[in-house]
Amino acid sequence: MKPIEEKERFTLSKIVSDSLRQYIVDNKLTTGHKLPSERDLASMLDVSRVVVREALRTLESTGIIIIRHGEGAFVNTDDSSVILNHLLFFWQMNNEKIEELFELRQLLEKAAIEQIIKKTDIGHLQELDHIISEMSETIDPIKFKELDIDFHRGLIKATKNELFLQLTDIIVQYFANVSHSHMDDVQRNKAIKEHRLILEALKDNDKDLALHLLSEHLQYSKIHKVSN
Image (tube, rainbow, N blue to C red; front, side, top):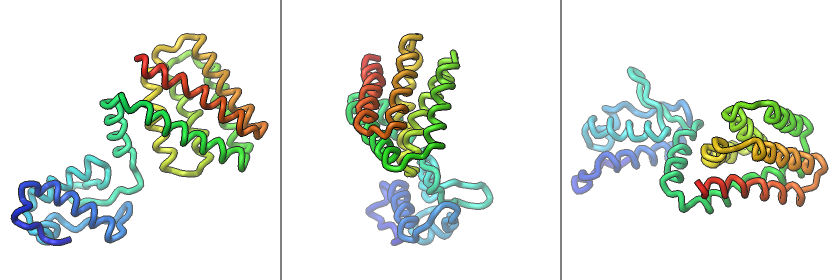
């Protein structure tokens, strides 16, 4: 990292934050690696420790690092949930982007279905079957919402892609936060039936049908979110 020039000092905290991000990348630091001390960082960048401290707090708020009092700052690349939740907040404030978000959700879940068809895992299908059974038995709307999220999360598990999984968690919650609170028995039964049909198509290795059923099923979440 190069020292901060005098002319840049009006945005010191941001510049230091950006420099620390680049430092993590350049040095290939991963979860658990410790950053230099505040004193060393201040010396490396030629800024005050106060500015370094502000920059570290900014990185902590985004989940990039964890600050342990008395120990220092540690890289936290394994947990992207904080960053993804910032994305969720952004989406909530920009509701006009719902179409793009819906398309992303479809792409992720369609990729999962294609992977399931390509390499069927009986245990995986049984997990989905169990989730559907629990959905049909519960009368608790919160539990129903959680199980619905579990079903779609279960689909994505087939990709074995952790980023897909984390993105899906956030996206599904975005749509579910509104839709399930207004569901009546007819709508709940419709959701359960659609899940069963998707699962049966997967068991039959019918990719086209499974993709069609998924698309039809996801339309409800999109339309219901827009109408609210």
